[in-house]
Length: 311
Image (cartoon, rainbow, N blue to C red):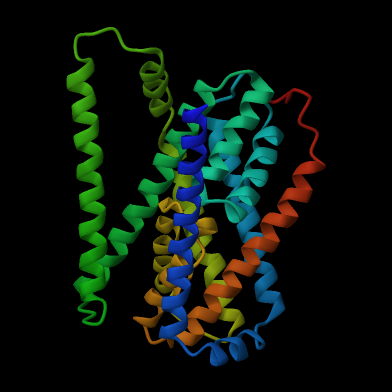
């Protein structure tokens, strides 16, 4: 009886800690920007651009489902099943603790549909590796390019982005090398073999679709900026979005605060006032919530029981 109680208290403490981080980020934003100006800016938003941004978000999740469908059929599950789970997990991700809660829901859905847990988990992790690797590489490429152009205001931030990505890459390499030393010459456990199989499914078309998803996310934020009357080079909303996407790795409630900080922080480096940047970030949050809510309703109407004759 003691162990379950301890686990329950630990879980509660972690959830409270995650919420505290998000609240702290919001407080910092409140101190940093003029909220009255931010709300006044939001009222001027063009609904047409907002709607287009939401449609692009739904397209991104459709491609996310296609990416996993290409990587693993999982006992012949049709694309519409992948799509339904992707849309539902997107909703959970926005109203839960980031990408981890959404993927947890998705794995549970695959387990109910196929009776398997290890295989969909391995392939979902592999798809996330492809996705976040593409995001990180995009951030590095834009940063190197801007530093090469001599953008003084971006220099420190660009160096930080490059160093962070290099450090993360080194950490991943160190873990993989340690795993290789641990299992060298030994029969591989089932989960390791499944993980290796999943990684082999990251083919060229998976990298391409991952890059397209990154560009579309940037295009969605560009729509938000255009809807506020801000005409700016596309690399700015793209860089802001990849920076915000990387914050999804933080176990914060819905990414609240940290994502908005990433959007406002990056755009402010390129002449967008913090208040307007925050307005765009809030609108981006609102558009994503509406898009994922609509996607949830759409997913409930998909027939996921039958087999896809094309697979």
